Amino acid sequence: MTIQATTATLSNMSLARRAWEIRRKAIRMGEVQGQGYVGQALGIADVLSVSYFHALAYRPGEPEWEGRDRFLLSVGHYAIALYSALIEAGILPEQELETYGTDDSRLPMSGMAAYTPGMEITGGSLGQGLGIGVGMALGLKAKKNPAFIYNLMSDGELGEGSTWEAAMSAAHHKLDNLICIVDFNDQQADGKSTEMLCSEPLGDKWASFGWHVQRVDGNDIAALVAAFDNARDLKEAKPRVIICDTVMCKGVPFLEEREITHFVRVEADEWQKALAVLDANRPE
Image (cartoon, rainbow, N blue to C red; front, side, top):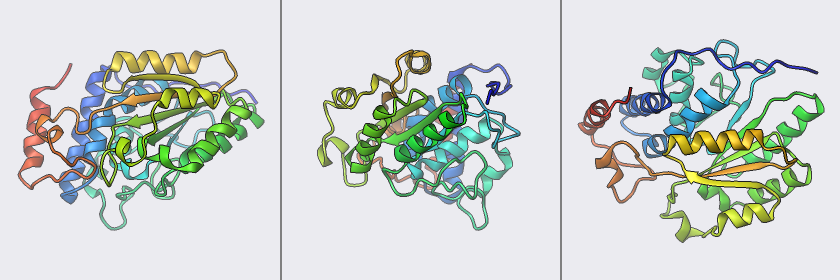
């Protein structure tokens, strides 16, 4: 089965500007409900920009195109971030942004594949995405489909045994079409991830499981582009992981300074203040 992997045709805009647009859309959705996991959305925006506007093959008007690269959101409560990327990519219409989290919306507060075009899996239970990705990667190989599986997971999921079972299985099956992205922001519901169940030395752990490992600043677009290219172009028959160290609430300094950022508290008047900060720093 031979499939021509085509990249989405989109306007020529810098990756930094795409990340800015993703951040801005996430804040706008957060304002609709007065809440949301905006800290994660702001932090992962650069990764999503590089994913959707540099690395992934997809067709905006045909989200179930067989030749697409599959982007799995294992960490389901990051849905507000992925919706922002899907809107920016033209997979979802921007006017639906105003329906975020409302009854009958296609943008529920936690990602659900049955509701949202471009949402490949329902990821509410943490630690499941990588295992699903292994199954999808095996399926693509069986069909001789050259597409890649990208699985975005959180650092909190590193404490789930299912993550490491999947990691071991991926290496055993030499899944060179599987790229795992770990958002390492060192935050989870009960505090710092490194204080809940420390996973360091993280790179060495993944390498010992048979993966090709890269660790980068997840808010450095040039570093991300290089890491994504290296992961995709690697000739070794092994799965690849990119560990991305990110800053929660990146791009809005007064939110970055909050002590608790897993579910950041944003006052009613602060949504517009956050947009004003972003607007004052809009890249070209």
